Each structure stands twice: as C-alpha cells, then as structure tokens.
Amino acid sequence: MSKKTPLHDIHVELGASFTDFAGWSMPLRYTSELAEHHAVRTSAGIFDLTHMGEIELSGPEAGRALDHALVGEPSKIAVGRARYSMLVHETGGVLDDLVVYRLGEDRYLIVANASNAVTVCSCLRDRIDGYAATIRDASNEWALLAVQGPNSAAIIGELADVDVASLKYYAVDPARLAGRAVLLARTGYTGEDGFEVYCRPEDAPALWRAISAVGAQHALVPCGLACRDTLRLEAGMPLYGQELTVRTTPFEAGLGRVVAFGKPGGFVGEAALAARRDEGPTRVLVGLTSTGRRAPRTGYAVLDPDTGERIGEITSGALSPTLGHPVAMAYLPADRSGPGTEVFVDIRGSRQEATVVQLPFYRRQA
Image (cartoon, rainbow, N blue to C red; front, side):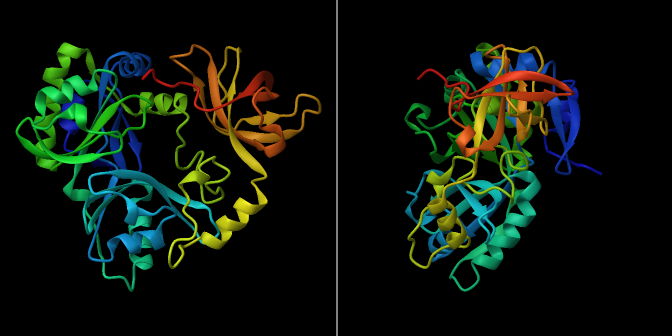
C-alpha cells in the first residue's frame, strides 16, 4: 500500500489524479498539467512535497561530519542559510542530491529525495561514525508544502509573522504561518521565486487551507508532480534517477562547482572526483531544443547527423509549455557539447533535428 501524506483527503476533495511515487500516493495533477505549469510561471502554485526525506544531524562535530560525508562544506554554511550538495559513492557517482539547512550552530537538516531517503540516512550514519554527532531520520515528523511563482511572496507575506521580503534566497527562518510554527525556507525547484513550508504533519491541512484562501486573491492553484517536472526541466534542474545517477559524477552533470576539495580530513569520493576533475569529463549534460512537433523522451537516442551513430541519450524531455517548442536534456560527448551543435533525436524511428543550447532553457526575470 502506498503511503498517504497528511494532505491526501484534501487532494481527493480537489479532484486530484494520483500516482505512486517512491512508495507514496502523490497528486499528479488536479486539472491539467499545462494550466498548473502556467500558473506557477504567471501567478503561483501550491505543492504537497511531504514525500521528501528529512534527516536531522546535531552535535558539536555535526558540521565536520557532514564535510566528510558530502561533497560540499556544510560547516561553512551560516546559521539560517541553506546549500545544495551531493552524497557520492567512493567512485564519485551521485547517490543523491540534497539541500542542507543549518538550523543552529550544531544542528542541520538534510532534505533528500523521496526515493533515496533511506539510503541517504544509512550512508550518513556510516560516514559520521567517530564524530561527535547524532543522526536521526525525522521524515515522519515533517510535512512539506511549497508555494512557487511570482505571487508567492505576497501570499506567504500575508500569513507569516516574519518579514518575508527580507528572507534571502536559500535561507531558512523559524516562523509562524497562519498561527502555526513552521520552518520557512526560500528555496525551490521550479525556476521561480518560492517558499518551502516545513511543518508538523497535523498542521499541514490547516496551513494548506489558509494558504489557499489567501492565494485565491493571487490566482494560486494546486499543482501536482507532472507540472513540477516540466517546470524543473525548463529551469535546467537535474532530477535524480535521470540526469543524476551513481554512474554520473557532478562534473558530467555540470555541477562540479558544488564540490569542495581540500577540506581537512577529505571526504568520501574525493580521490575519484579529483581524477575526474583533472581528466575532464568525456560526456557532459547539455540542453537540446527543436522546432519539431514531437518531444524527445527519456531514453531516446541522440544521433550523429552525418553518420547516424548513437552518440548520446535523452535524460528528460517535454514540450515546453512556456517556450512552445520541445526541450530536452541529454548526455553527449564533450567534443559534441558546444552550443549550436546540430544532432538528430530518434523519436520512435523518426529522426528529428535538434540543437545544443546552454542551460537553462528558461530564466525568470529578476
């Protein structure tokens, strides 16, 4: 049986279509993914993300422990700020990408992808052994709502007891929202301004209804996982299991900047990643655009236009609702990854022209 979030009954009430995702029954869409996608780009959308995993790490050596366990340097995150990071295998392959929040001097919250939460917690527990730090899987203690879109600050601002405008991007602040204690973070996975609301599971339904009531004046709509995928694709954000896998290092994915070399004591996977950095990746993640009518999909072959040889594979693809033409991400040989490079994509036996472009496909106006 799929697990249900505390908001399940509200999703049913709203007429959501459901899908099983990482063992959770999650809303895929409420009306149409196209309408929900456009709402996030033009007004605002509210998402249930309770399926994500929350892992808490605390203790006098919590920062040093995370420095050893992850590719980044969490010990240098300021209290009240967040940073994107990764957990990698000893071979340098990505086990998961994470957001690390520093909630206090000796307290961190690590947010893992739903499908990897157990793996991440287990790996971290092994890697912090010997440090003065305590780890626990707190996923059952948190529900997570996200409000994304250009109107998100106005909506959250009406309900919060903190100055939402002053909350910086990738910051987190304890707050009261609609009278309930939350952690309010200004992060997101859509390419728009937005907020994540971490709350007690029992408070999630009241918070959803309060946000929706205020949001009705700002064209807020409930959004499912389907539009979340096209939003993050347009924003060029990788997805674990597609762009990021244990067979891929941060350097292939164009995310070498998140790796901090030279940390005292090193980190798991450092030798492998240093070698990959020095050698340079043989394949890299690129964006592809097309004027064709059909969108490339995950697993479709990318072909050399001269020889027809398979030179890569689509990791994610869709018809971009915002741009009006197909977009995709794919891994291609480094020498075929320059913007302007022409390729073919094999779409069910038919070859469609595509052009390599720099990611992201969409960038919001400041």
